[in-house]
Length: 396
Image 1 (cartoon, helix red, strand yellow):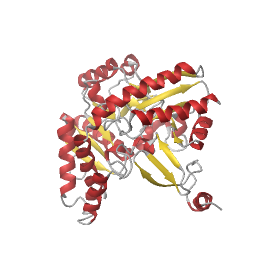
Image 2 (image 1 turned 45 degrees about the vertical axis):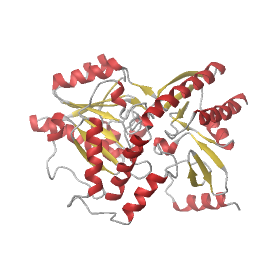
Image 3 (image 1 turned 60 degrees about the horizontal axis):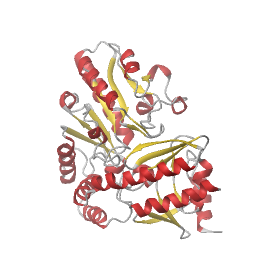
Image 4 (image 1 turned 90 degrees about the vertical axis):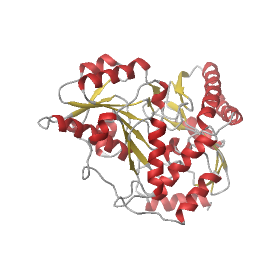
């Protein structure tokens, strides 16, 4: 029995079956390549679902974590700690926002953002039962609050009763959003680029309209940048590409580049909504996790990661356009920076499997869309290698 089969059988025995995993047991990484327990190599164009922005075995990043391990791993939020304060400062100064609350995941960041908006509305008028406007085909996480604003009934059924769900509007349809505003609306939440929903970037006019509407109604605008933020779209924060600033922003994934950490960031009036006792977490702001955040921001700046994404993202777009033009089964190509997708006229599961057999890790976004979210350090040569493998699969 191979090591792969041994671990798969053990995993099937002991792990709760909530994932349909690929039959690969990953063991280590180097740069933009992953290796399984049997020594097979894979070019990674999934980055652990857009997490490993800096690739694998980045020495500066690893050294920062090792150094923090030798100092202290946990303090609780009954005390300050140096990495959390430094990480919060980096986020505030780069975003132009005001305050940071660290969480352990993207879903928790969304939960906190929703609480900020509800509390802000409650402080103005505690007599109403408030609700959110969210977008169809959105994805914000698997916890109940996050699911309540996730625009996919399949994820909600059995977990979130209809009366607890947000009011859903069409993404990039400002008139539809405006028509659904009531005196019970406490906030509008959307991804700047929809990820799980199919790699759909927002229109500039749409986000500008949301900003104006929220200002007029004195409600909060929440941007989910868990996947599209942290340099992935060609700006440190995706909303910078649009010149539209939210009241609350959710971050995670590449914020820690592998260490589980998220954050919600508040600006202006939203920063005063929560007071001591309103929200908390045992591990949020953990010295180890926030040391990772500090390292990520330092490396992004030192190695000019965002500028690199602009360059190689343009090259990836050109190459994927060529792939699209060569295959009539590909009906659309869209995305920004290193967050792009190819839409097919049928399911892409078999394409992903065959690509993996050839040493390429790809992901889907829905049943019929190939999602390309590689480490942000990929080069044009890696793009060429990916396209050669993908073309070989499509040719068959």
